[in-house]
Amino acid sequence: MTSAPTRKLGTNGPTTSALGLGAMGMSDLYGPADEAESIATLHAAMDAGITLIDTGDFYGMGHNELLIHEALRGRDRSSVQISVKFGAQRGPDGSWLGVDASPAATKTALAYTLRRLRTDYVDIYRPARLDPNVPIEETVGAIADLVQAGFVRHIGLSEVGADTLRRASAVHPISDLQIEYSLLSRSLEAAVLPTARELGIGITAYGVLSRGLLSGHWAKDREMAGTDFRGHSPRFQGDNLSHNLALVDALRTIAEAKGVSVAQVAIAWVASRGEDIVPLVGARRRERLAEALGSLDVVLSAADLAAIETAVPAGAAAGDRYAAAQMAHLDSEH
Image 1 (cartoon, rainbow, N blue to C red):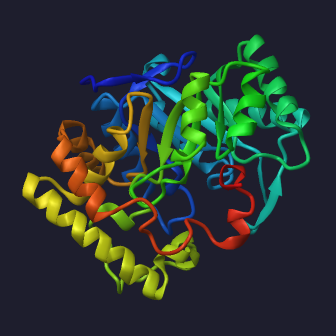
Image 2: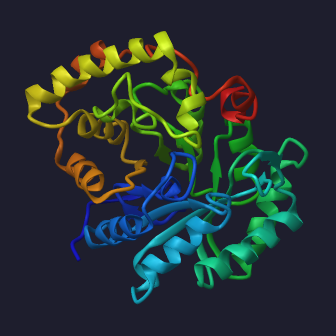
């Protein structure tokens, strides 16, 4: 076991490793995954000092939580922080049925999560999306009951806007906001990030490699499995993809001059935006995890940051980060 650098999630949140591991792709949405390799990757992350593991109860319909339980077998539960999203409703065919973050659904979902993880608490619990039918005060109030009862340590939010952050934090301290943040997704910088900082709320940044687009490993002719979400993502379509890969090539020039990979520069850039930001990487295999861990050693100078800004300026991406129907569900984008 080694220790990684740490960061504190907001004023009231936990101290975690400066890089977190998002486990979604090990169960869902990016095509087939190898379970043995997934567990080996989780073990390698923990051995490297990664303490923050992010999941959702709807990732593979509980499969992801069961996988994390398996990876934690025989290890010290207190050595990791498990962050769980809930509320996304899905059918047995994997279809998306909306969001339910009502108090009863919130507490029921946690009961199942605790059983699958075989733990008596989760470190951070958060609704995956704002429920349009339930005031955020009611959802946060329900999680606050779970905090009081000892089943949850901290309350987080995901993809909400500045107004919702204010309303939520008036009910109970919020540790962190999980939101997409990368060189290609910077809309949070206008209002959401300043509000989070004003309220003492940390940021766990997902999509730091824009779902592989910024990894430096994506090719225009790459075949995608039918279950791969990226097959429907605007940024991976036609001319948008060509435009975005040209941005990656510009970033590659900077990375090569520093002797590091494109992915390492992209992750380090997100980390450079503030000590209150913890990038989540979605590595599914050990070699990708090792590459991501290398970003912790990348120091970006003022000249590097200026060159990156020139190569990939804010708003440079072609295409939204989700299809229109999903964008409509993002409180953070309204």
